[in-house]
Amino acid sequence: MLIPKLLLALSLIVGEVSSFLVDYVNDLDGPMDFSCAGNTSLHQLASSHDNGAEDRRWSFGCLPARDKVQNCVWSGYVNDFDRPVLYECPGEDFINGVRSIHDNGAEDRRWAFQCCALRGHARSHCHFTGYLNQYDGPLSYTVPDDQLIHGISSIHDNGAEDRIFAFEVCHYVEGEYKK
Image 1: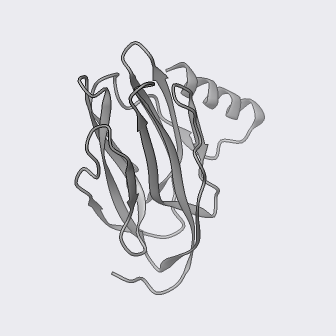
Image 2: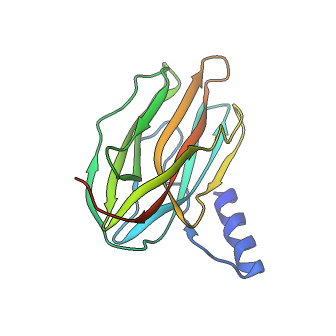
């Protein structure tokens, strides 16, 4: 709970609150279910790893979207425990929610994602960020203002009992909505 509150306090001090990073949305070893509400899009992700529980707690922040967020659909779980995640939303959609369940035997999570469309926009100039954390280390990522997350890559390590994460981000430009 300390990391999100410190980030918010720092943002308030410098006078730049671009989104609101909510408190942790999951307990260690517990399920997680988060999606940006209404007409907002996922803008910040942060997590910290606990070596005792061998799990991560997650926080997310959302910003008002540039256009109407519509047609949101959840994927099923996209990985098995201890297996990589490589997932992209279909078509022009972007990731706007995250679900996961933890298994104490595998000390890992299975992941599902909510994909939504941004009315009147198509994705362009997509690229992966590269891995943003080290095993057992914190993760903090703010999506650039003109981009959305289209995909995710994650690798689990059985020694560290943790995952590293990279995100595929895309510019969303005005264009024909294809669905």
